[in-house]
Length: 120
Image (cartoon, rainbow, N blue to C red; front, side, top):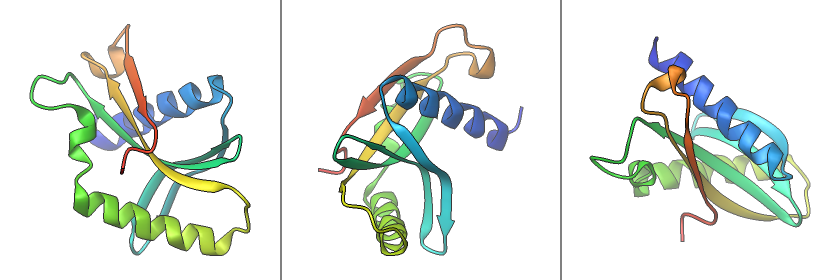
């Protein structure tokens, strides 16, 4: 299985996780010259720009640790562009969803952690 297929599978799992928790998915894979945002979702008064990180396990590092400062800056800049094109009265925040799938797409049990307001 290629990396793109696995990444798309992980993003599908993350979007379903958010839906089950009452989020409305507004957009997926928003891309611009500044970067990409995996999922843009709303719930209550919040607009969540979500970065999805998929790993087999956390033996080396937690998945969230791969969202470094440079990645955060690219996501924030892309989010600013997205916000400039959409007139929404919601409080933006940046979340990270970690997925741990030991056997990739064949994993029977996937661990999912959502870190809200992860860039603070």
